[in-house]
Image 1: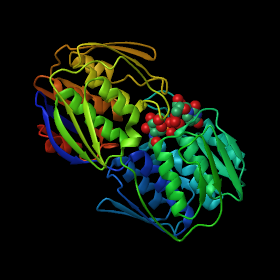
Image 2: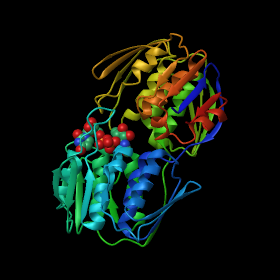
Image 3: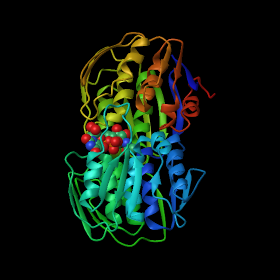
Length: 418
Ligand code: UD1
């Protein structure tokens, strides 16, 4: 079983370069098949989720290579329209390929993405959006069989501002005839980034990153190049690490405006954040304060993905912090693992009350999901002795070179692969 061993009790010191955003790279890789040409995607993080997306592209008949942080996709030879169950299971967000495959081939067969570690993760909004654009969808034997001989632009009113459904709608709309208006769209920076990529492909997109997005479907350029934005959740995780362990770190390649809610929360705790261009110096002293109440919300609110690492940092702050999770039902699976390390956290439904300031001790803990795994790393930095985190496959879905980055920040961290 792969594991990550972290020795706690050392302050952080050092400098690292932040990875590109996983949640931007995945929809952009899916959208790369729209053009039947070549796309070059720079600043792409090397992660197992990205590898899974490349596998899907290859399965569809595309050429997809990863070299030195850049992905090259040539989709001129694409012939497929299905994603087999084994690939759907490797990455739950593979449903993001639905709009792209439909737009490119007029049909798509995908297995239903299964239940998720964060609670039920329905795709009803994705399917309703495809139907609005003219797709016919059959659910048979756990498969989604979709036909859309010609997608047509339409008005899509999203019931909730789902990130994935907004992305799928934008991608499908890019391949539809006419204009699509998406209302109540998610406003996450990754959607703005997808909009920039579609623009580089020659699509007319307005409002990406606001709650109203307009996409004019049409022809694509045969070549597009794009640079993925910095990963704001990885940035939040490293800030949580310095809040927990103390010390001073420098993160290169950050985007300050995408981190506003995250910066506000850590500043409330007494973490010093100094942005200069795309470089951030983050430092924390001996004492940090609890951040009062943190409620997760769609962007520009505090991101649900940064909740687990922030909660772990709060364990060092004497006093009470209250968390309210409004996005996912089951996003406190890291709590029982943190409790094994000595944390005092009470969960009641969507609320978690954290009593910080108790000393933590090293333990063997299991990463319950991607960001829950990040929380265990943050807690391990403050724990006395060694923490062995197992089930690191979840962490590898989202954090590039996590062990080497921790080492560059002065931490004794060792990854063991089977
Ligand atoms: C994306 C991110 C994930 C992040 C989440 C919320 C990627 C690859 N993943 O996930 O890291 O935690 O945004 O910021 O970008 N919902 C429905 N029906 C649907 C779709 C969603 O009810 O068809 C609900 C979900 O159950 C959830 C809420 O909408 O309660 C938000 O989910 P959504 O924004 O779609 O998250 P993802 O796109 O899956």
